Image 1 (tube, rainbow, N blue to C red):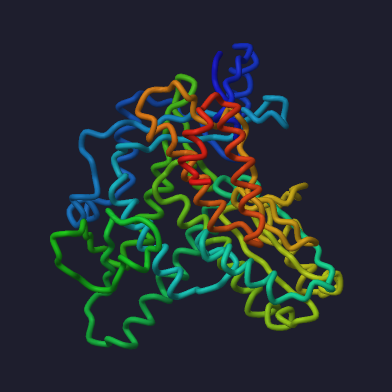
Image 2 (cartoon, helix red, strand yellow; image 1 turned 90 degrees about the horizontal axis):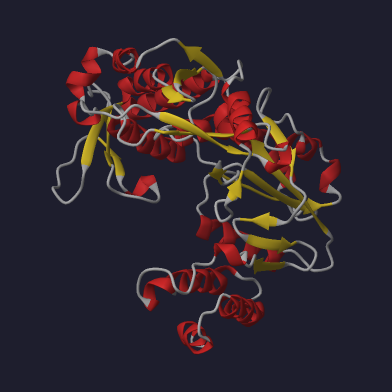
Length: 416
């Protein structure tokens, strides 16, 4: 069996077929996560379509695909677990409900940022690095800093579905109350999203209706969002290992809506902590810095802050509540960069040679050099302090030369 392991997409692994199949079976047979269904393909289609009330089909005809593909699951076996279990991934590409879930996902992201603002998990990559650079500039070099690096273990699969629904219900109610206060004559509260847009959802999401042909705009009735989410959880049915399964805890990794309400559930916990403890921690003597990027929590503070009750609560591995777990990460990596809190530096983590496109691969020289230019752009933009940029670019250039790219082409692309 030829496949790649978890987080090893640049490395091809040859598995013993028995080992691979047993690892996949162990993964899907987790009774806390999945229920095996004695379905045929037709029965699976009926179960998925019937999970959505008829009025949703009539109200959002653009949100459903009649000739839909059935979702299917596969696993990336984990090396650290000796390939006995793996990370699940379910392909919902061109699934029955994909378009509606994409629109509702974008609506939830926008509503969350506007109604439950907080700094732990709602910063994009440029904002994260800008904030960290300012932090290093502001904290005196005589202050000793410590780092806490955590990983939210299987956050998509670990949050109970009741908690996901409760989080969505809280957000929808808060949004509705806020808008009815400003517009008491509204018969119903709607939100319109541009599902063709990417990036910050608040840039393309607004209340009410709006018509402009340049955008792919879809109007969602806010009172329908909880029903859509509940239906999406009920329709988490997919094929794997020649049979059908239903996910009964968490949200399917691969579903268009899963990142949004998984993030919502943990954001509510973080924001509650922020309102209670962040004000007391936000003092110069504690030098507190905390962010979460997807499932990676990165916390910096002084040794004195480590004795603060609020800090102890935040770093507790059960901070988000069982069965959601935190795992200590024994490195200083954040979004592809190494962060040395003692030296106050941010340096790009150079890629493995296998992650670099081959110099004789298909396409033009410009295409083959695109990865080099993208990495160089990240180095120039996010390295701190800036006098480390040249050394990182030179190290990157040497990797491409080792990959048999012409030195002249490499240094020309980098303009060094």
